Length: 462
Image: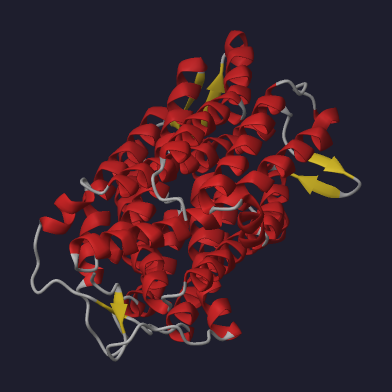
């Protein structure tokens, strides 16, 4: 049987320093906690209510980006697998991709003074470029887990640190967002532009630190030349098929909730809710979930031990998400119940916190399975499917949110003077509110039910 990874001809299992775990966590703190978190929760509302795209343009933009990712993600995975440099196989993509990631993110949150066509061109060009840069950084980052250690327990720890880093930074980003907006002042477009530049710089520094602090101890067993065979092998790999579908569902689940949260606070609850001096806008509302995911993401390895396997732990975590999402639907649509809503978000996030680290650890299992079966490493290619499912689930859910809100009666766009216009006819207001409420509760519950079924039939039982 082929050895998955080799170091000096021997299986590798050396001690992992704490600084390296922190370094690895910084990678997803930048990608998951800053760039992707803002893109998931703020972009649908930003594009329609601040930038000035129509709901149709917003939905189309995200759908086109997904078709783009179907091509770029697997190619990036294959390219990363074949990279050879003084910095290793995957680390150079983080080191040299850090600055482009932060720069393009900043430009995407800038609203130029253009008409409808100019804004459309700007948004489409920058969004596609952002997806390409994100892929060039995040696919190698995920693949890095496969060459840092051969020990399964260590992989679970790295994966747990990754999730804690992402959720901790997500907590800081979302909680501070409304206060930073008030500090910046000016129009909302100006606020987003300044915060985009600031957060982009932080994300770039964290990504660079991740590339410099981590180590590649293991050497991938490379194919001798480029071939389409690894792509064909994927579709004969049943664990990969199931796990990719699970990943898409998990990101659909989160994507619906994050994409519609801004609309929910704005239209269902009448805007910001202030309780004892605490400003609860849509970013702060989801922050309660972030800190919960951070805590229970750190407890995920212990929860997995108690459950007996990754598969059983994932299933129990998914059940939590289904039950709590259904409960949210029956909460009155009234600001007076804000703490009930927050409580349910916290309970839902316990389930998310438990299963999120497991997903990436399971990708490492699938990569090991593929290497043993095929004789060569396709770690980057397999982990690219994880990144693709993340972007596919989040963006398609965002596109569906925009599309369904448009069907319900939500209208947005840019007028001839370049001003953003949002209108909802009085007779459509209840329809829009009900659609928003279902998109935060019933739609995610349905997706989680599908995810539970997929995890049940997932064949690897580690």
